[in-house]
Image (cartoon, rainbow, N blue to C red; front, top):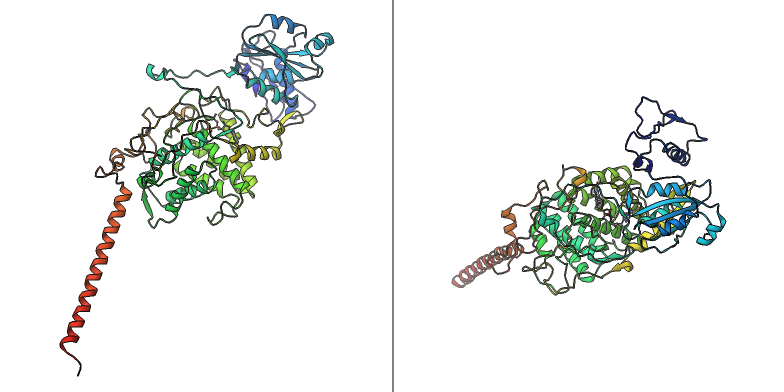
Length: 570
Ligand SMILES: Cc1cc2nc3c(=O)[nH]c(=O)nc-3n(C[C@H](O)[C@H](O)[C@H](O)COP(=O)(O)OP(=O)(O)OC[C@H]3O[C@@H](n4cnc5c(N)ncnc54)[C@H](O)[C@@H]3O)c2cc1C
Protein backbone atom coordinates (compact mmCIF):
# COMPACT_ATOMS: atom_id res chain seq x y z
CA UNK A 1 0.00 0.00 0.00
CA UNK A 2 1.13 3.55 -0.75
CA UNK A 3 1.42 4.33 2.94
CA UNK A 4 4.41 2.13 3.35
CA UNK A 5 6.29 4.40 0.97
CA UNK A 6 6.15 7.34 3.36
CA UNK A 7 8.09 5.76 6.10
CA UNK A 8 11.73 5.46 6.61
CA UNK A 9 11.29 4.20 10.16
CA UNK A 10 8.95 1.46 11.30
CA UNK A 11 6.20 0.23 9.08
CA UNK A 12 2.57 0.81 9.81
CA UNK A 13 1.19 -2.64 9.94
CA UNK A 14 -2.15 -4.29 10.20
CA UNK A 15 -2.53 -7.37 12.30
CA UNK A 16 -5.35 -9.01 10.39
CA UNK A 17 -5.84 -11.89 12.81
CA UNK A 18 -7.15 -9.92 15.73
CA UNK A 19 -7.33 -6.16 15.46
CA UNK A 20 -5.63 -3.44 13.47
CA UNK A 21 -2.57 -1.97 15.14
CA UNK A 22 -0.67 1.04 13.91
CA UNK A 23 2.91 2.01 14.63
CA UNK A 24 4.07 5.57 14.22
CA UNK A 25 7.12 6.22 12.10
CA UNK A 26 10.42 6.53 14.03
CA UNK A 27 8.94 5.07 17.21
CA UNK A 28 11.87 4.30 19.48
CA UNK A 29 10.18 3.10 22.67
CA UNK A 30 8.70 -0.34 22.87
CA UNK A 31 5.05 -0.19 21.91
CA UNK A 32 2.32 -2.58 20.94
CA UNK A 33 0.95 0.03 18.55
CA UNK A 34 -2.33 1.86 18.54
CA UNK A 35 -5.57 0.02 18.04
CA UNK A 36 -8.02 0.91 15.41
CA UNK A 37 -11.66 0.02 15.76
CA UNK A 38 -13.48 0.98 12.61
CA UNK A 39 -17.12 0.30 11.75
CA UNK A 40 -16.07 -2.67 9.62
CA UNK A 41 -13.03 -4.45 8.20
CA UNK A 42 -13.72 -3.50 4.58
CA UNK A 43 -10.62 -2.70 2.59
CA UNK A 44 -11.83 0.83 1.94
CA UNK A 45 -12.47 1.48 5.65
CA UNK A 46 -9.04 0.18 6.66
CA UNK A 47 -7.37 2.18 3.91
CA UNK A 48 -9.10 5.38 4.99
CA UNK A 49 -8.22 4.70 8.63
CA UNK A 50 -4.59 4.38 7.63
CA UNK A 51 -4.76 7.67 5.75
CA UNK A 52 -6.27 9.37 8.83
CA UNK A 53 -3.62 7.85 11.04
CA UNK A 54 -0.84 9.00 8.75
CA UNK A 55 -2.29 12.48 8.41
CA UNK A 56 -2.76 12.92 12.16
CA UNK A 57 0.53 11.59 13.33
CA UNK A 58 2.82 13.45 11.02
CA UNK A 59 3.04 16.74 12.95
CA UNK A 60 5.72 15.68 15.45
CA UNK A 61 7.85 13.05 13.82
CA UNK A 62 6.98 13.46 10.21
CA UNK A 63 8.54 10.90 7.82
CA UNK A 64 10.52 13.00 5.34
CA UNK A 65 9.18 11.15 2.29
CA UNK A 66 5.57 11.74 3.24
CA UNK A 67 3.93 14.71 1.53
CA UNK A 68 1.54 17.02 3.38
CA UNK A 69 -1.96 15.60 3.45
CA UNK A 70 -3.73 18.58 5.00
CA UNK A 71 -5.76 20.73 2.60
CA UNK A 72 -4.60 24.11 1.34
CA UNK A 73 -7.05 27.00 0.97
CA UNK A 74 -8.56 27.41 -2.52
CA UNK A 75 -7.22 30.96 -2.64
CA UNK A 76 -3.66 29.58 -2.12
CA UNK A 77 -3.89 28.24 -5.67
CA UNK A 78 -3.29 31.77 -6.96
CA UNK A 79 -0.02 32.12 -5.07
CA UNK A 80 1.03 28.66 -6.34
CA UNK A 81 0.44 29.92 -9.88
CA UNK A 82 2.66 32.94 -9.18
CA UNK A 83 5.40 30.99 -7.39
CA UNK A 84 5.81 27.92 -9.54
CA UNK A 85 8.92 25.81 -9.08
CA UNK A 86 9.42 24.23 -12.50
CA UNK A 87 7.35 21.16 -11.66
CA UNK A 88 3.74 20.36 -12.34
CA UNK A 89 1.46 21.25 -9.45
CA UNK A 90 -1.88 19.43 -9.27
CA UNK A 91 -4.57 20.52 -6.82
CA UNK A 92 -7.44 18.15 -6.10
CA UNK A 93 -10.60 20.00 -5.11
CA UNK A 94 -12.93 17.82 -3.11
CA UNK A 95 -15.59 17.72 -0.43
CA UNK A 96 -14.78 17.48 3.25
CA UNK A 97 -15.50 13.77 3.48
CA UNK A 98 -13.59 12.76 0.33
CA UNK A 99 -10.35 10.77 0.38
CA UNK A 100 -9.63 11.11 -3.35
CA UNK A 101 -7.17 13.98 -2.89
CA UNK A 102 -5.11 12.17 -0.26
CA UNK A 103 -5.15 8.95 -2.26
CA UNK A 104 -3.90 10.72 -5.37
CA UNK A 105 -1.21 12.49 -3.31
CA UNK A 106 -0.03 9.09 -2.03
CA UNK A 107 -0.26 7.49 -5.48
CA UNK A 108 2.09 10.10 -6.90
CA UNK A 109 4.79 9.77 -4.21
CA UNK A 110 7.08 7.63 -6.38
CA UNK A 111 6.92 10.15 -9.24
CA UNK A 112 9.13 13.15 -9.86
CA UNK A 113 8.51 16.50 -11.53
CA UNK A 114 5.09 16.76 -9.96
CA UNK A 115 3.61 17.77 -6.60
CA UNK A 116 0.01 17.13 -5.61
CA UNK A 117 -2.04 19.06 -3.08
CA UNK A 118 -5.67 19.03 -2.03
CA UNK A 119 -8.14 21.80 -1.31
CA UNK A 120 -11.63 21.69 0.13
CA UNK A 121 -14.44 23.06 -1.98
CA UNK A 122 -15.52 25.66 0.58
CA UNK A 123 -14.68 29.02 -0.97
CA UNK A 124 -17.29 29.51 -3.68
CA UNK A 125 -15.70 32.69 -5.03
CA UNK A 126 -12.28 31.10 -5.52
CA UNK A 127 -13.86 28.01 -7.08
CA UNK A 128 -15.79 30.22 -9.48
CA UNK A 129 -12.62 32.04 -10.54
CA UNK A 130 -10.94 28.70 -11.25
CA UNK A 131 -13.95 27.46 -13.22
CA UNK A 132 -14.71 24.59 -10.83
CA UNK A 133 -18.36 23.60 -10.88
CA UNK A 134 -18.23 20.10 -9.40
CA UNK A 135 -15.97 18.09 -7.13
CA UNK A 136 -13.79 16.15 -7.12
CA UNK A 137 -11.90 18.09 -9.80
CA UNK A 138 -8.23 18.45 -10.54
CA UNK A 139 -6.65 21.81 -11.31
CA UNK A 140 -3.24 21.63 -12.94
CA UNK A 141 -0.47 24.22 -13.05
CA UNK A 142 2.03 23.36 -15.79
CA UNK A 143 5.78 24.02 -15.44
CA UNK A 144 5.50 26.85 -18.00
CA UNK A 145 2.89 28.61 -15.84
CA UNK A 146 -0.22 27.80 -17.86
CA UNK A 147 -3.03 26.34 -15.78
CA UNK A 148 -6.53 24.92 -15.98
CA UNK A 149 -8.86 22.08 -15.05
CA UNK A 150 -7.95 18.66 -16.37
CA UNK A 151 -10.43 16.60 -18.25
CA UNK A 152 -10.86 12.98 -17.21
CA UNK A 153 -13.61 10.64 -18.35
CA UNK A 154 -14.63 9.87 -14.74
CA UNK A 155 -13.91 11.83 -11.52
CA UNK A 156 -12.22 8.84 -9.88
CA UNK A 157 -8.92 8.39 -8.08
CA UNK A 158 -7.56 5.97 -10.74
CA UNK A 159 -8.36 8.40 -13.55
CA UNK A 160 -6.73 11.40 -11.81
CA UNK A 161 -3.66 9.39 -10.82
CA UNK A 162 -3.24 7.83 -14.23
CA UNK A 163 -3.60 11.20 -15.98
CA UNK A 164 -0.99 12.84 -13.77
CA UNK A 165 1.46 9.93 -14.12
CA UNK A 166 1.26 10.12 -17.89
CA UNK A 167 2.12 13.84 -18.16
CA UNK A 168 5.25 14.56 -20.23
CA UNK A 169 8.39 14.53 -18.02
CA UNK A 170 6.57 13.00 -15.07
CA UNK A 171 8.63 9.88 -14.40
CA UNK A 172 8.96 7.31 -11.72
CA UNK A 173 11.90 8.20 -9.48
CA UNK A 174 14.60 5.85 -10.62
CA UNK A 175 16.12 3.46 -8.17
CA UNK A 176 19.88 3.80 -8.05
CA UNK A 177 21.46 1.34 -10.43
CA UNK A 178 25.06 0.21 -10.27
CA UNK A 179 27.13 2.40 -12.58
CA UNK A 180 28.15 0.83 -15.86
CA UNK A 181 31.83 -0.03 -15.89
CA UNK A 182 32.45 1.13 -19.42
CA UNK A 183 32.24 4.86 -20.12
CA UNK A 184 31.84 4.25 -23.84
CA UNK A 185 28.73 2.15 -23.27
CA UNK A 186 27.18 5.03 -21.34
CA UNK A 187 27.69 7.41 -24.21
CA UNK A 188 25.60 5.22 -26.52
CA UNK A 189 23.18 7.42 -28.42
CA UNK A 190 19.71 6.00 -28.62
CA UNK A 191 17.45 7.59 -31.20
CA UNK A 192 13.97 7.95 -29.74
CA UNK A 193 11.03 7.14 -31.98
CA UNK A 194 7.84 8.97 -31.21
CA UNK A 195 4.90 6.59 -31.05
CA UNK A 196 1.29 6.31 -30.06
CA UNK A 197 0.59 4.05 -27.06
CA UNK A 198 -2.81 3.17 -28.42
CA UNK A 199 -1.32 1.51 -31.54
CA UNK A 200 0.38 -1.81 -32.09
CA UNK A 201 3.57 -1.53 -34.12
CA UNK A 202 4.52 -4.04 -36.81
CA UNK A 203 8.17 -3.18 -36.16
CA UNK A 204 7.85 -4.51 -32.58
CA UNK A 205 6.21 -7.76 -33.64
CA UNK A 206 8.65 -8.37 -36.49
CA UNK A 207 11.72 -7.47 -34.41
CA UNK A 208 10.43 -9.85 -31.75
CA UNK A 209 9.96 -12.67 -34.28
CA UNK A 210 13.46 -12.05 -35.64
CA UNK A 211 14.86 -12.29 -32.13
CA UNK A 212 12.83 -15.36 -31.28
CA UNK A 213 13.77 -17.28 -34.44
CA UNK A 214 17.37 -16.18 -34.85
CA UNK A 215 18.53 -15.62 -31.29
CA UNK A 216 16.37 -17.37 -28.72
CA UNK A 217 16.01 -20.64 -30.65
CA UNK A 218 19.70 -20.56 -31.55
CA UNK A 219 20.49 -21.62 -28.00
CA UNK A 220 19.31 -25.11 -29.05
CA UNK A 221 21.85 -26.90 -31.20
CA UNK A 222 19.35 -29.42 -32.44
CA UNK A 223 15.71 -30.08 -31.73
CA UNK A 224 14.08 -33.41 -31.00
CA UNK A 225 11.27 -34.97 -28.96
CA UNK A 226 9.29 -32.59 -26.76
CA UNK A 227 11.38 -29.60 -27.88
CA UNK A 228 10.68 -30.26 -31.53
CA UNK A 229 6.96 -30.76 -30.84
CA UNK A 230 6.87 -27.50 -28.84
CA UNK A 231 8.51 -25.66 -31.74
CA UNK A 232 6.24 -27.25 -34.38
CA UNK A 233 3.11 -26.35 -32.42
CA UNK A 234 4.29 -22.83 -31.70
CA UNK A 235 5.15 -22.18 -35.34
CA UNK A 236 1.77 -23.63 -36.40
CA UNK A 237 -0.06 -21.24 -34.07
CA UNK A 238 2.00 -18.24 -35.14
CA UNK A 239 1.74 -19.12 -38.85
CA UNK A 240 -2.04 -19.38 -38.64
CA UNK A 241 -2.65 -16.39 -36.40
CA UNK A 242 0.11 -13.82 -36.99
CA UNK A 243 -1.71 -10.80 -38.41
CA UNK A 244 1.32 -8.99 -39.86
CA UNK A 245 2.56 -8.28 -43.35
CA UNK A 246 2.17 -10.94 -46.10
CA UNK A 247 5.92 -11.66 -46.66
CA UNK A 248 6.35 -12.45 -42.96
CA UNK A 249 3.20 -14.55 -42.89
CA UNK A 250 4.43 -16.42 -45.96
CA UNK A 251 7.75 -17.14 -44.29
CA UNK A 252 5.96 -18.48 -41.23
CA UNK A 253 3.68 -20.64 -43.39
CA UNK A 254 6.68 -22.08 -45.24
CA UNK A 255 8.40 -22.86 -41.95
CA UNK A 256 5.23 -24.45 -40.59
CA UNK A 257 4.72 -26.64 -43.66
CA UNK A 258 8.33 -27.71 -43.62
CA UNK A 259 8.15 -28.65 -39.94
CA UNK A 260 4.80 -30.40 -40.36
CA UNK A 261 6.05 -32.59 -43.22
CA UNK A 262 9.41 -33.36 -41.72
CA UNK A 263 10.09 -37.12 -41.74
CA UNK A 264 12.92 -36.73 -39.23
CA UNK A 265 12.63 -36.88 -35.44
CA UNK A 266 15.67 -34.67 -34.88
CA UNK A 267 16.63 -31.54 -36.80
CA UNK A 268 19.62 -29.24 -36.52
CA UNK A 269 18.72 -25.67 -35.59
CA UNK A 270 20.71 -24.56 -38.64
CA UNK A 271 18.10 -26.06 -40.93
CA UNK A 272 15.46 -23.82 -39.30
CA UNK A 273 17.77 -20.84 -39.62
CA UNK A 274 18.32 -21.51 -43.33
CA UNK A 275 14.59 -21.35 -43.91
CA UNK A 276 14.19 -18.21 -41.79
CA UNK A 277 17.03 -16.62 -43.76
CA UNK A 278 15.27 -17.67 -46.98
CA UNK A 279 18.41 -19.29 -48.32
CA UNK A 280 16.47 -20.64 -51.26
CA UNK A 281 15.69 -17.04 -52.24
CA UNK A 282 12.00 -17.63 -52.75
CA UNK A 283 10.36 -14.39 -53.72
CA UNK A 284 7.74 -12.77 -51.51
CA UNK A 285 9.24 -14.17 -48.30
CA UNK A 286 10.92 -11.87 -45.83
CA UNK A 287 11.63 -11.33 -42.16
CA UNK A 288 13.74 -8.39 -41.10
CA UNK A 289 17.09 -9.17 -39.53
CA UNK A 290 17.14 -5.78 -37.78
CA UNK A 291 15.86 -4.96 -34.33
CA UNK A 292 13.84 -1.79 -34.21
CA UNK A 293 11.70 -1.30 -31.12
CA UNK A 294 8.97 1.32 -31.27
CA UNK A 295 6.19 0.71 -28.73
CA UNK A 296 8.71 -1.52 -26.94
CA UNK A 297 11.52 1.06 -26.76
CA UNK A 298 13.16 1.40 -23.40
CA UNK A 299 14.58 4.58 -21.94
CA UNK A 300 17.81 2.60 -21.49
CA UNK A 301 19.09 -0.10 -23.85
CA UNK A 302 18.75 -2.86 -21.26
CA UNK A 303 15.08 -2.13 -20.56
CA UNK A 304 11.99 -3.50 -22.35
CA UNK A 305 12.54 -4.69 -25.95
CA UNK A 306 12.19 -8.41 -26.60
CA UNK A 307 10.08 -9.44 -23.60
CA UNK A 308 7.69 -6.57 -24.32
CA UNK A 309 7.34 -7.70 -27.93
CA UNK A 310 6.77 -11.28 -26.79
CA UNK A 311 3.86 -10.23 -24.59
CA UNK A 312 2.42 -8.26 -27.51
CA UNK A 313 2.80 -11.26 -29.80
CA UNK A 314 1.08 -13.55 -27.28
CA UNK A 315 -1.86 -11.16 -26.79
CA UNK A 316 -2.17 -10.79 -30.55
CA UNK A 317 -2.34 -14.57 -30.94
CA UNK A 318 -5.08 -15.02 -28.32
CA UNK A 319 -7.09 -12.17 -29.85
CA UNK A 320 -6.73 -13.53 -33.41
CA UNK A 321 -7.86 -16.97 -32.22
CA UNK A 322 -10.85 -15.35 -30.48
CA UNK A 323 -11.86 -13.24 -33.46
CA UNK A 324 -11.13 -15.76 -36.26
CA UNK A 325 -12.63 -19.05 -35.02
CA UNK A 326 -11.79 -20.90 -38.25
CA UNK A 327 -8.14 -19.87 -38.34
CA UNK A 328 -6.93 -23.05 -36.63
CA UNK A 329 -9.01 -25.46 -38.74
CA UNK A 330 -7.11 -28.56 -39.89
CA UNK A 331 -4.25 -27.99 -37.49
CA UNK A 332 -5.38 -30.34 -34.75
CA UNK A 333 -6.03 -27.32 -32.51
CA UNK A 334 -9.48 -26.48 -33.83
CA UNK A 335 -12.19 -26.35 -31.19
CA UNK A 336 -9.73 -26.21 -28.30
CA UNK A 337 -10.16 -22.89 -26.44
CA UNK A 338 -6.94 -23.43 -24.48
CA UNK A 339 -4.84 -24.32 -27.53
CA UNK A 340 -3.08 -20.97 -27.96
CA UNK A 341 -2.39 -20.58 -24.24
CA UNK A 342 -1.09 -24.15 -23.87
CA UNK A 343 1.22 -23.73 -26.87
CA UNK A 344 2.51 -20.41 -25.50
CA UNK A 345 3.03 -22.12 -22.14
CA UNK A 346 5.14 -24.86 -23.75
CA UNK A 347 7.15 -22.28 -25.71
CA UNK A 348 7.91 -20.37 -22.50
CA UNK A 349 8.81 -23.56 -20.64
CA UNK A 350 11.04 -24.89 -23.41
CA UNK A 351 12.65 -21.90 -25.07
CA UNK A 352 12.19 -18.63 -23.15
CA UNK A 353 15.66 -17.50 -22.12
CA UNK A 354 14.53 -16.07 -18.77
CA UNK A 355 14.07 -19.30 -16.81
CA UNK A 356 12.89 -17.51 -13.69
CA UNK A 357 10.14 -15.79 -15.69
CA UNK A 358 9.21 -19.17 -17.16
CA UNK A 359 8.84 -20.67 -13.70
CA UNK A 360 6.54 -17.84 -12.59
CA UNK A 361 4.46 -18.25 -15.73
CA UNK A 362 4.24 -22.01 -15.22
CA UNK A 363 2.97 -21.47 -11.67
CA UNK A 364 0.18 -19.24 -12.97
CA UNK A 365 -0.64 -21.70 -15.74
CA UNK A 366 -0.82 -24.65 -13.34
CA UNK A 367 -3.10 -22.70 -11.07
CA UNK A 368 -5.81 -21.68 -13.52
CA UNK A 369 -5.16 -22.27 -17.23
CA UNK A 370 -7.41 -25.32 -17.09
CA UNK A 371 -10.37 -23.13 -16.17
CA UNK A 372 -10.32 -21.48 -19.62
CA UNK A 373 -13.37 -22.72 -21.53
CA UNK A 374 -13.76 -20.26 -24.44
CA UNK A 375 -11.43 -18.27 -26.71
CA UNK A 376 -12.64 -15.04 -25.03
CA UNK A 377 -11.68 -16.45 -21.64
CA UNK A 378 -8.24 -17.21 -23.08
CA UNK A 379 -7.84 -13.54 -24.08
CA UNK A 380 -8.88 -12.45 -20.58
CA UNK A 381 -6.74 -15.07 -18.84
CA UNK A 382 -3.58 -13.80 -20.49
CA UNK A 383 -4.55 -10.18 -19.81
CA UNK A 384 -5.14 -10.85 -16.10
CA UNK A 385 -1.92 -12.83 -15.71
CA UNK A 386 0.05 -10.12 -17.49
CA UNK A 387 -1.37 -7.59 -15.04
CA UNK A 388 -0.35 -9.88 -12.17
CA UNK A 389 3.20 -9.92 -13.55
CA UNK A 390 3.06 -6.13 -13.89
CA UNK A 391 2.08 -5.66 -10.26
CA UNK A 392 4.71 -8.16 -9.09
CA UNK A 393 7.41 -6.27 -11.00
CA UNK A 394 6.31 -2.72 -10.08
CA UNK A 395 9.25 -0.96 -8.46
CA UNK A 396 11.62 -3.72 -9.62
CA UNK A 397 14.96 -2.66 -11.11
CA UNK A 398 13.81 -3.99 -14.48
CA UNK A 399 10.94 -1.48 -14.52
CA UNK A 400 11.47 1.34 -16.99
CA UNK A 401 10.72 4.62 -15.15
CA UNK A 402 9.33 5.97 -18.40
CA UNK A 403 6.91 3.02 -18.61
CA UNK A 404 5.81 2.34 -15.03
CA UNK A 405 4.19 -1.00 -14.37
CA UNK A 406 0.56 -0.20 -13.74
CA UNK A 407 -2.68 -2.09 -14.33
CA UNK A 408 -3.27 -2.04 -18.08
CA UNK A 409 -5.13 -0.63 -20.01
CA UNK A 410 -4.80 2.65 -18.10
CA UNK A 411 -7.91 4.85 -17.77
CA UNK A 412 -6.71 7.17 -20.53
CA UNK A 413 -6.49 4.22 -22.98
CA UNK A 414 -9.79 2.66 -21.94
CA UNK A 415 -12.01 4.76 -19.65
CA UNK A 416 -14.88 2.29 -20.00
CA UNK A 417 -12.71 -0.55 -18.65
CA UNK A 418 -12.42 1.13 -15.23
CA UNK A 419 -15.05 1.27 -12.54
CA UNK A 420 -15.18 1.97 -8.84
CA UNK A 421 -17.02 -0.51 -6.66
CA UNK A 422 -17.42 0.35 -2.97
CA UNK A 423 -14.66 2.92 -3.32
CA UNK A 424 -12.21 0.44 -4.84
CA UNK A 425 -10.90 0.33 -8.39
CA UNK A 426 -12.37 -2.51 -10.40
CA UNK A 427 -12.52 -3.70 -14.00
CA UNK A 428 -15.44 -3.95 -16.36
CA UNK A 429 -14.28 -7.21 -17.95
CA UNK A 430 -16.72 -6.97 -20.86
CA UNK A 431 -15.25 -3.61 -21.81
CA UNK A 432 -11.70 -4.85 -21.24
CA UNK A 433 -12.36 -7.75 -23.63
CA UNK A 434 -13.68 -5.39 -26.29
CA UNK A 435 -10.66 -3.15 -25.80
CA UNK A 436 -8.19 -6.05 -26.06
CA UNK A 437 -9.86 -7.25 -29.26
CA UNK A 438 -9.53 -3.78 -30.75
CA UNK A 439 -6.03 -3.06 -29.50
CA UNK A 440 -4.49 -6.36 -30.58
CA UNK A 441 -6.34 -6.65 -33.90
CA UNK A 442 -4.73 -6.38 -37.33
CA UNK A 443 -6.68 -3.14 -37.87
CA UNK A 444 -4.65 -1.52 -35.11
CA UNK A 445 -1.31 -2.49 -36.65
CA UNK A 446 0.84 0.48 -37.55
CA UNK A 447 3.59 -0.11 -40.12
CA UNK A 448 5.43 3.13 -39.30
CA UNK A 449 9.13 2.40 -38.72
CA UNK A 450 8.80 -1.19 -39.96
CA UNK A 451 11.53 -2.58 -42.18
CA UNK A 452 11.32 -1.99 -45.91
CA UNK A 453 10.20 -5.25 -47.44
CA UNK A 454 13.22 -6.82 -49.14
CA UNK A 455 13.24 -8.97 -52.26
CA UNK A 456 13.91 -12.70 -52.26
CA UNK A 457 16.53 -13.64 -49.78
CA UNK A 458 16.79 -10.25 -48.15
CA UNK A 459 15.69 -11.48 -44.78
CA UNK A 460 18.96 -12.28 -43.14
CA UNK A 461 21.10 -11.72 -46.22
CA UNK A 462 24.57 -13.02 -45.67
CA UNK A 463 26.40 -9.75 -45.98
CA UNK A 464 23.95 -7.90 -43.77
CA UNK A 465 24.92 -7.08 -40.21
CA UNK A 466 21.81 -6.44 -38.13
CA UNK A 467 21.37 -3.09 -36.57
CA UNK A 468 20.31 -3.35 -32.93
CA UNK A 469 19.12 0.08 -32.05
CA UNK A 470 18.35 0.65 -28.44
CA UNK A 471 19.50 -2.87 -27.71
CA UNK A 472 17.06 -5.64 -26.95
CA UNK A 473 16.13 -6.35 -23.35
CA UNK A 474 17.55 -9.82 -23.42
CA UNK A 475 16.30 -12.30 -20.92
CA UNK A 476 19.21 -13.13 -18.80
CA UNK A 477 20.86 -16.21 -17.50
CA UNK A 478 18.90 -18.14 -14.92
CA UNK A 479 20.10 -18.03 -11.39
CA UNK A 480 20.93 -14.35 -11.37
CA UNK A 481 19.10 -12.01 -9.08
CA UNK A 482 15.54 -11.41 -10.14
CA UNK A 483 16.10 -7.69 -10.30
CA UNK A 484 18.69 -8.11 -12.98
CA UNK A 485 16.96 -10.90 -14.77
CA UNK A 486 16.57 -9.09 -18.06
CA UNK A 487 19.97 -7.73 -18.87
CA UNK A 488 21.46 -7.90 -22.33
CA UNK A 489 24.58 -9.94 -22.82
CA UNK A 490 27.66 -7.79 -23.24
CA UNK A 491 28.24 -9.17 -26.68
CA UNK A 492 27.72 -7.84 -30.16
CA UNK A 493 24.43 -8.53 -31.85
CA UNK A 494 24.00 -11.73 -33.80
CA UNK A 495 24.85 -11.87 -37.48
CA UNK A 496 22.13 -13.80 -39.18
CA UNK A 497 23.33 -15.89 -42.03
CA UNK A 498 27.05 -15.99 -41.53
CA UNK A 499 28.04 -17.39 -38.15
CA UNK A 500 24.42 -16.83 -37.40
CA UNK A 501 24.50 -18.01 -33.82
CA UNK A 502 24.63 -15.26 -31.25
CA UNK A 503 27.15 -15.47 -28.49
CA UNK A 504 24.72 -15.68 -25.64
CA UNK A 505 25.36 -15.07 -22.01
CA UNK A 506 26.46 -17.84 -19.65
CA UNK A 507 23.74 -20.11 -18.38
CA UNK A 508 21.55 -20.12 -21.47
CA UNK A 509 20.70 -23.76 -21.92
CA UNK A 510 22.45 -25.21 -24.90
CA UNK A 511 24.26 -22.06 -25.94
CA UNK A 512 26.08 -23.01 -29.09
CA UNK A 513 29.80 -23.40 -29.26
CA UNK A 514 32.10 -22.01 -31.90
CA UNK A 515 32.14 -25.21 -33.91
CA UNK A 516 28.39 -25.13 -34.32
CA UNK A 517 28.34 -21.53 -35.28
CA UNK A 518 30.82 -22.34 -37.98
CA UNK A 519 28.50 -25.08 -39.22
CA UNK A 520 26.22 -22.36 -40.49
CA UNK A 521 28.92 -20.86 -42.70
CA UNK A 522 28.10 -21.43 -46.38
CA UNK A 523 29.77 -24.62 -47.51
CA UNK A 524 32.42 -24.61 -50.25
CA UNK A 525 32.03 -20.84 -50.47
CA UNK A 526 29.18 -21.43 -52.94
CA UNK A 527 26.24 -20.44 -50.80
CA UNK A 528 25.28 -24.09 -50.00
CA UNK A 529 23.83 -24.49 -46.58
CA UNK A 530 23.88 -27.63 -44.47
CA UNK A 531 20.25 -28.24 -45.52
CA UNK A 532 21.25 -28.03 -49.19
CA UNK A 533 24.14 -30.41 -48.57
CA UNK A 534 22.00 -32.99 -46.78
CA UNK A 535 19.47 -32.87 -49.64
CA UNK A 536 22.32 -33.43 -52.12
CA UNK A 537 23.55 -36.46 -50.19
CA UNK A 538 20.03 -37.94 -50.05
CA UNK A 539 19.56 -37.37 -53.81
CA UNK A 540 23.00 -38.84 -54.54
CA UNK A 541 22.28 -42.01 -52.56
CA UNK A 542 18.80 -42.35 -54.09
CA UNK A 543 20.07 -41.97 -57.68
CA UNK A 544 22.93 -44.47 -57.10
CA UNK A 545 20.41 -47.01 -55.79
CA UNK A 546 18.17 -46.37 -58.76
CA UNK A 547 21.07 -46.88 -61.24
CA UNK A 548 22.13 -50.11 -59.51
CA UNK A 549 18.55 -51.41 -59.66
CA UNK A 550 18.32 -50.60 -63.36
CA UNK A 551 21.67 -52.31 -63.96
CA UNK A 552 20.56 -55.55 -62.26
CA UNK A 553 17.17 -55.42 -63.94
CA UNK A 554 18.65 -55.22 -67.47
CA UNK A 555 21.33 -57.78 -66.68
CA UNK A 556 18.79 -60.34 -65.54
CA UNK A 557 16.62 -59.56 -68.58
CA UNK A 558 19.47 -59.93 -71.05
CA UNK A 559 20.52 -63.27 -69.50
CA UNK A 560 16.98 -64.61 -69.85
CA UNK A 561 16.84 -63.41 -73.45
CA UNK A 562 20.18 -65.11 -74.25
CA UNK A 563 19.03 -68.35 -72.64
CA UNK A 564 15.86 -68.35 -74.73
CA UNK A 565 17.84 -67.56 -77.93
CA UNK A 566 20.32 -70.44 -77.51
CA UNK A 567 17.69 -73.11 -76.57
CA UNK A 568 14.74 -72.53 -78.84
CA UNK A 569 11.64 -74.58 -78.07
CA UNK A 570 11.04 -77.56 -80.26
C1 LIG B 1 5.60 -14.75 -20.20
C2 LIG B 1 6.49 -13.72 -19.55
C3 LIG B 1 6.79 -13.80 -18.20
C4 LIG B 1 7.63 -12.86 -17.60
N1 LIG B 1 7.97 -13.00 -16.28
C5 LIG B 1 8.86 -12.13 -15.73
C6 LIG B 1 9.32 -12.32 -14.39
O1 LIG B 1 8.90 -13.26 -13.70
N2 LIG B 1 10.25 -11.44 -13.90
C7 LIG B 1 10.74 -10.41 -14.66
O2 LIG B 1 11.59 -9.66 -14.19
N3 LIG B 1 10.29 -10.20 -15.91
C8 LIG B 1 9.39 -11.03 -16.47
N4 LIG B 1 8.98 -10.85 -17.75
C9 LIG B 1 9.32 -9.61 -18.45
C10 LIG B 1 8.36 -8.48 -18.03
O3 LIG B 1 7.03 -8.95 -17.92
C11 LIG B 1 8.35 -7.32 -19.02
O4 LIG B 1 8.19 -7.82 -20.31
C12 LIG B 1 9.56 -6.45 -18.96
O5 LIG B 1 9.77 -5.99 -17.65
C13 LIG B 1 9.39 -5.23 -19.88
O6 LIG B 1 8.25 -4.51 -19.44
P1 LIG B 1 7.48 -3.45 -20.32
O7 LIG B 1 7.43 -2.15 -19.61
O8 LIG B 1 8.02 -3.41 -21.69
O9 LIG B 1 5.95 -3.98 -20.41
P2 LIG B 1 5.46 -5.45 -20.63
O10 LIG B 1 4.94 -5.97 -19.35
O11 LIG B 1 6.48 -6.25 -21.33
O12 LIG B 1 4.22 -5.22 -21.60
C14 LIG B 1 4.40 -4.93 -22.98
C15 LIG B 1 3.24 -4.10 -23.45
O13 LIG B 1 2.05 -4.86 -23.36
C16 LIG B 1 0.95 -4.01 -23.02
N5 LIG B 1 0.39 -4.53 -21.77
C17 LIG B 1 0.78 -4.30 -20.50
N6 LIG B 1 0.02 -4.99 -19.64
C18 LIG B 1 -0.86 -5.69 -20.38
C19 LIG B 1 -1.91 -6.59 -20.07
N7 LIG B 1 -2.21 -6.89 -18.82
N8 LIG B 1 -2.61 -7.13 -21.08
C20 LIG B 1 -2.34 -6.83 -22.36
N9 LIG B 1 -1.36 -5.97 -22.72
C21 LIG B 1 -0.64 -5.41 -21.74
C22 LIG B 1 1.49 -2.61 -22.90
O14 LIG B 1 1.31 -1.97 -24.13
C23 LIG B 1 2.97 -2.85 -22.64
O15 LIG B 1 3.75 -1.79 -23.09
C24 LIG B 1 8.15 -11.79 -18.38
C25 LIG B 1 7.84 -11.70 -19.74
C26 LIG B 1 7.03 -12.64 -20.33
C27 LIG B 1 6.73 -12.55 -21.81
